[in-house]
Amino acid sequence: MRVALGVSGGIAAYKAGELVRLLQQEGLDVQVVMTRGAREFVTPLTFAALTGQRVITDVFESPENGTPNVESAIEHIAVAQRIDLLLVAPATANVLAKLAAGAADDFLTTLYLATKAPVIVAPAMNVNMWQHPATQQNIRILQERGVHVVQPDEGYLACGALGPGRLAGHEEILRTVRDVLKLRQDLAAVKILVTAGATCEAIDPVRYLTNRSSGKMGYALAQAAHRRGAHVILVVGATQMPPPPDVDWELVHSAEEMEHAVRQRGEDADVIIMAAAVADYRAAAPAAQKIKRGASGMTLALESTPDILAGLGREKRDRVLVGFAAETQDMNEHAREKLRAKGVDMIVANDVTQEGAGFDVDTNIATLFLRDGTELPLPCMSKLELADHILDQVLHMLPVSRG
Image 1 (cartoon, rainbow, N blue to C red):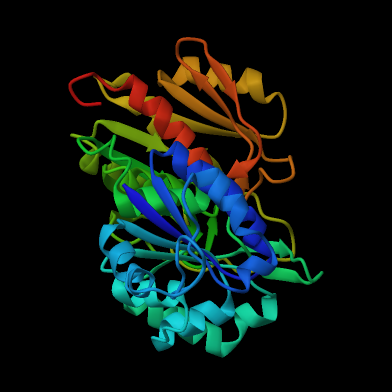
Image 2 (spheres, rainbow, N blue to C red):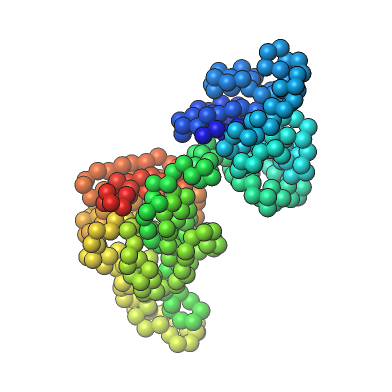
């Protein structure tokens, strides 16, 4: 498949060289198109050496001597017709504005208007430029037209500012490319149920017991599985995030409600991934009315909630079953014991005291503990990246007839 990589004039242009290599590793043929501004940061020769192809830099450019001719004047039409995807990375505020307005004053913007291939843009710019209402309106216009936008990362920018605007990581861009081109549909015949978020156990009508889970890991798993073609069912506890698009989902509150939903919705699932943080205890006798403050302290009697994972392990059949273990000490020992006690195929364990691995962050540091004794420690990565690592292991565990 052929991808036109549009490189525009920002400091992130230097990252496009590595992106070319990664696209090629996906088996894609890459044609680089550079704007005039991009050539101030990186030379066309760099991309020509990486791709083995001439780099297109202007509409009226002759392949031989740089003088205009008829062939170069209509080359954008030929490129537009032969590509399967147009990827603009980095996409500056200027290029986004041109694409949204339908301007065509260079090869890249002309190619955008001429192609019927899907388009992905990966913005990169100063935080104030990214947050400016004009840029945000241009992004909305492009999205309404079906353009896929890879949101920029947050962090320190080349100008020294801190905030969103940094070019998204290569892996995130590649995931969008794979998704749009349907390069990875290895879970197309698989039904996966994922739980996410925290459960809430009522103390009285206005108070409850819960935990700090944000649901981000479960959502990442649902998103990654959907991108890889699976039929995904997401059972969601407490979270501030809206349900992901194109995923069948059900909202629950308590551990008992989650158990009922998992058993009912997951009866014919090939895979169940219990990423939710299920409360271990609930009030033994929740009050019917709000408990009023008293002069002295209060004792709350607790009882255990249903152990959903252990129950699924006892009735496992040929399903692949994955559990999570959020620990604060002796992570490896606790994870191995949970793997044995729950009767599951994999435990994803993380030490939530580590920076980048706790609650309500977009990254995680985990070790995968498999039933055959394999232990796979993984470095800090986005939760979406971790989700794909987990699903890679799940794929190997599926019966051949399904996986």
